[in-house]
Length: 244
Image (cartoon, rainbow, N blue to C red; front, top):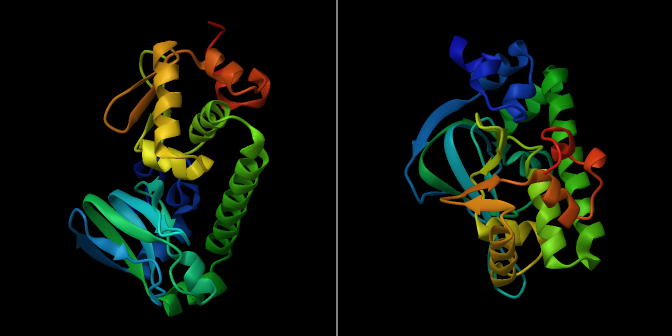
């Protein structure tokens, strides 16, 4: 499986990209490959299953239903990502539903094999800890922002996305975020989809961003950081491009 252990094969910042080659090989060797079709629920919220999944090809949507019965899309996971690991470590019903977007190739590890791998491979264990800490820090950032307007929270979330695998610099120098919907944005900042749609429309009207097919292009990065009420030196986009 040489191509699977090649760091270049995986989007920068993903779980698989950050692993050293021996750990990546061990992770793949511990699982089996499956292909699921578009719209298939890989795991369902409330299920007692404890398998762990590596996203080899394609994307999945993570969604949940809150205590009031409202459905929301929380985020999109891309190739190179890992999911299902929390329930493998701490037995509990699945906290979210994961659905395939298009046909998806996965590597599936049983709970027992995943735990054994963590016991034997410090690199995988360390990267899992790092990913969990990053997720907690992101949640804390959202909680800290809760007093801000939806417009400001949206701008801050777009900047955070640029630090993740779905942020990249295009050949023309503009910044782009792929794979995120208005629903996932709303779920991440704790706002309604309608409020996020309104905020995105404002950014488009001001010429700060353009959008198309789960793709957000940051046309004016310095303007975005200003609207996010963040100093350019404290956010990713501050040093990528010069002032407008």
